[in-house]
Image 1 (tube, rainbow, N blue to C red):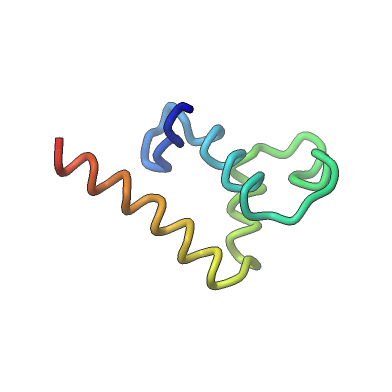
Image 2: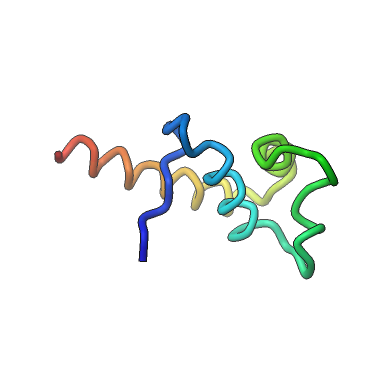
Length: 73
């Protein structure tokens, strides 16, 4: 499948935030991921303030993989 977007890629900030919420925030319905009218990046930043330390580490590791690939290329 397609690669996950980098959080540093400004063209994909909203997509990155949406995917990270889908992967790490507990939810049953799409409405559980963000408030009505809220931008994905805003919901993601709110989630980062309360999420588990292990999830924060996983999120950071996903970004490090991108950075390593960029350095290699």
